[in-house]
Length: 142
Image (cartoon, rainbow, N blue to C red; front, side, top):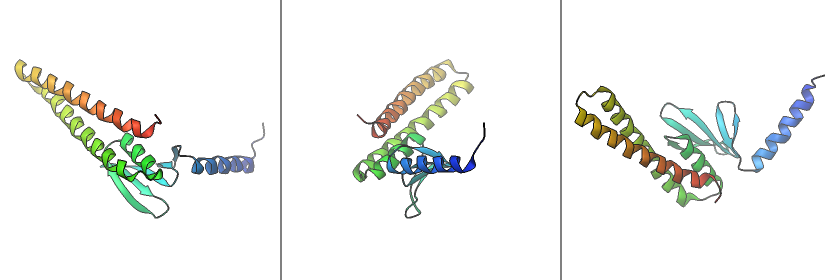
């Protein structure tokens, strides 16, 4: 089979042009693109950039929130972006609570403290998963 580099580049340009018209996330280099919004992994979470204006939009904790905010930005649903940021902060808070409780479970020798930490861990994980599920409703059509 003969590999033609020009055909491969033409096919890539056709696919890229189609992806720019639809709000479907795709990976390009070290970022995830959704139309004109780029999502990049950062040490503090995920940073969203507007590639048209080359401006930073927001930094969030989880990738689900980053995708939700990117989609809301493209759809110009700016009132829902604040709610998505609050949900991301909730995920962040309960995730940290779960890490703290897990560490306490692993290190504690007191059975009462370990048992109370297990309850705290379960509550934190349920709350984090609930907030993530709410964020996913912004991403997927109802």
